[in-house]
Structure formats: C-alpha cells, structure tokens
Length: 453
Image (spheres, rainbow, N blue to C red):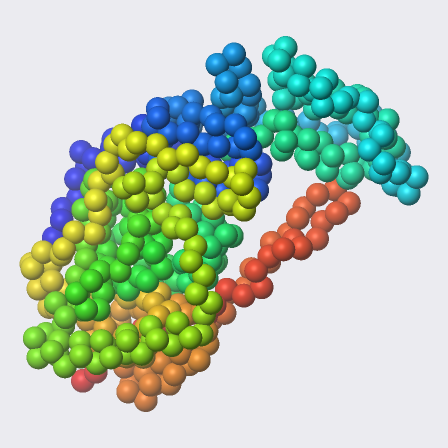
C-alpha cells in the first residue's frame, strides 16, 4: 500500500489558495452567465463578447479574485477589480428605500429616446481611455428615466450595462462542488444528472473518510472519482473499476488540480481482476451482455444530441460551459504544463490485499449499466459491515436492486433516499425560491454489507 508522505504537504498547499501556471481554474463570467474551465498559461486566451483577452493576469492570484475587462493601448485585458459592498445602512439609504417603494414603472415609455448618449459618443469615450465603470455612470447620468425607475429596475439596468461594457470575471477554485454545479447547470447529462446535494449525500452515506480504500464505479466522467479523492485528502486509495477491457473516461479528474501524491492514490482495475479467476470468466460474460443491452436501450430512450466535450483534454485548454451564441467563443492555447496523470493500473499487491481484506466502502454512479447485476458482483468485494451507496437517475433500478438484496440477505439498513434541494434568492423585498432550478436530483440506495455465511 502507499505510505503517507509528509514531504508533499507543500506541493498540496499550492492547490488551495493561489493559482500557478498550468493549473485549472473555473471562470465565472458575469455572475453565472458563462462558466468556463481553463488551464492557465501565458498563451491562453479567452474571448468575451468580441474581445480577446489573455489569461496571464490570472496567474499567481488567489482564488476568489474578481477581474474586469478593460481596453488599453495594447488591446483588451483583464484588470484586478475590488467588489464594492455599499450597504444601505445610513438614514439617507433608508430614506431612499422608502421613497422607492412609492415608485412604479407605469409612466415609463420605452421608445429609445431616454438615453442622451449615442453610440458614437460611447466609442469616443473608449478611444479616450474611459473605463467600463465610467461609461456606465455616463449612461446613467444621461438617462432621463433612470431616477424614475424602481430600485429593482435600476439594479437591472445597471447590471445589463455592466455585462456589456464592463464584464466581470470571477476566479473560482475547481473543487467537487463548483465542478458539479458547473456541469449540472449546462451539460447535466455528462454527469448523469448528478446534482451537488446528491453527490454530497453519496460521499456521506458511503462513509468516505481518511485512510479508506474506496471501490468506485464511475460513469459520470470522473466527477465521482475526483470527489472521493478530494475528500480522502491524500490518504487511502480510490479504485476506479470498470467492466470489460476499456476503462471509463474520467477527464474531470484533471480539473481538480490534484498533487502528484493524490494522483498516485487514484488507481484503476477491471472487475475481472478484482474477482477471483473462477468468478470472472462467468460474470464478465454476463456483464458484457448487459452492457450491450443497456447501450442499445439508451440509444433508443435518450436524445442523441452531440455536445462539444467540455472537459480538459490534452489538446483543449479552455472549455466553455455557457457558449450559446457566436460571441461566446473560446480560443485554445498551446499547453504549457502537463498535469500529473491519475488512474494508473492497480498493482497486484493492492489487488491481493483487497481480495483478502475487502474495500472500506462502495460507491456506484453508473446509469448505463444494470444496477442489480453490478451490485451482485461487487458487493462480495466489500469487507463485512462496509457501507455502500448507489446513485441512479431513476427509481425502478434501485428498487429492484434493494428487493434482491433483501431476498439474498446480503445487506441491512437498506433505504432509498431522494435528495431535495431548493435554492432561494435573498434580496430586500424580493426573497423567494429561484425561478429556474432543478426539481429532481435522482435517487440513492444505501445500506451495509453483512456476512453471507
């Protein structure tokens, strides 16, 4: 087994607070309008609207930093910005709030005559070196209807102009939560519609803790594998198992910025290698038949929509999760640093140890496979009293699996949970559930393996 190495603590610390050349980041553009995964390098560029800007200013900055797109003599660039936190705590602010309650927009007529600045005036300001915030203030000052609007309408107007003339870019750290939220927001099918609350429930029900050896079946792009490795924090081992001869893709693991020590603890092994020789020859044939049937069923049941791969591969440095128009174009850059490869083949001594002692827990997120067949073959690999958690988008496969586990007296404490999450907008005089949110987060079957004797 792999020993703990305290000498790698400094290497792990660089992943937590400060960006470096070659690391992956999540760029939140205009408060969630676009979510972009990028690998930082001096040559990497990002296109916002019709302007190309370099990502070099983001190197060496702390996560959570806010940047604003500016135009200088050498072209557009990202400038460090400080978020303004102007609260309405003074008496003047409270008076403005009270006065605004009596306003409404009934008398406003939208005939494009309220703005005194023309497009030529704005271009002239840009040529003179005016910042985006200065243009926004000029637009507000030259609007004849701005003061007549409600506070809510004023905020919407200011936000709309800010997105056009002074786009904001928030530098976010790619961790399990942010990665899951970003994928779920745009391409939920790539991660099996696994919502962030369901992911956290999976890790909790499987008791993922330090120095555990976790058996994972991950068919959600590597998100589950990365989340388990992140929670282990450089201890224990994560075994990503697969059926047949071809491992499942886990490109999302590259986005986590794992250190070399953590990457070494993510290994792969086929189910046939984990099972005994007698079992593998018979069961793998059954699995191959199930996989073929499931793949044909999926082709018939789901829409065959080809979506551009948004994971970080060796030839793509920037990946856009919000590209919905011609303006949302990403320019790829030459790779500078090669990330440490995770998912090497498990050593034979590791496999022998798992066969003798069993895994600490089992986590499955494989919507394309038959759940009961998979669980039936993998649950003997667990040690006695080891927990397991299985995610599926639909209820019926988990109900069938739960029924068969009860009949076979293979597990206790079986339960099917449906995670439920409601996101609220909390603002003055307009606190309510968000208008656009997911009402469905799949189902999770959990239990504890018992001795079969």
